[in-house]
Each structure stands twice: as structure tokens, then as C-alpha cells.
Image 1 (tube, rainbow, N blue to C red):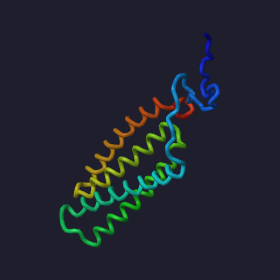
Image 2 (cartoon, rainbow, N blue to C red):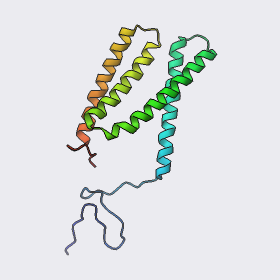
Image 3 (cartoon, helix red, strand yellow):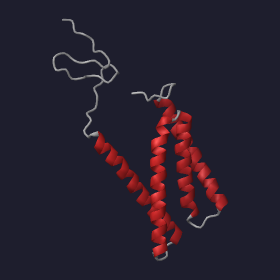
Image 4 (cartoon, rainbow, N blue to C red):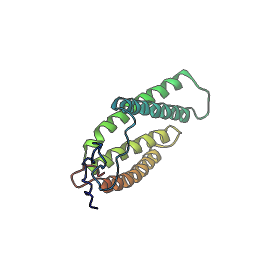
Length: 158
């Protein structure tokens, strides 16, 4: 008995449901959440990351001492700035080519780490050196990931 071969992106027989995602033989994973839920989750993730980062920076700054009002203010301002920068990088990075995409995320990660490191009573030179090392490591990993998951025009594969 002969059967028709599946067509990438096509529809199956009578049910009318799509059975492939553009690759032969694979089915699409179900999308459990709406677009609104994904937007809320993205903002919630930024808020949680920002609060953790702000707490971490404030804890480094006080060096185990008592929590003061200025320390709380510093933590919340740091959290707000981190959230704003994280959302900006997250909005801008996917629109860039893979080299700039990786460079933007690595610069963000390096600067974020360098700032935390500087709050622990380290010298500016050592903080900058550590930030550069972390940024370079992030660049290597992210460039490899984007290079292997994008085509030559920068479109994501799969």
C-alpha cells in the first residue's frame, strides 16, 4: 500500500492539524501558554533577577554589617537599573547579527559581574580585569551558540 510522504509544514489527512514543523518526521511541541502569559513571564523574570541582583549588590556593599536605610536604597536602585538594562538588552539583542548579539550579552554580563565584584571592596583594576574575563568567556560561549543555531542571514534554525 502506498502512502504520501509528509510535507514540511504541511497538513495531515483528514484531521487538518499540522504534523510537522519544517523538519521531516518531527511534530511541533504544544504551546501551552498564550502570548500574554509569555510577556508576563518575561517581565516577572526581569523583576526577580533584578531583585536578586540588587540584594546581592547591597549584601556585598555592607560586607556582613548591619542593614541600613541607605543600604536598602542602594539595593533597590541597583535592582531597578539592572532590570531596565536587562529588558533593554533583551529587546535589542535578537535584532542584531550573531556577533553583535553575543557581544551585547557578554558586555552586559561582564559589567554586571564587575559591578558586583567592585562592591566587595576590590580594586577598580581587579574588578575591570574580572569583568573582562567573564565577558570574554560569555562571548565565546554565546558566539558559538548563536553561530551553530542561526543561518548566514541571522535567522534562527529550527
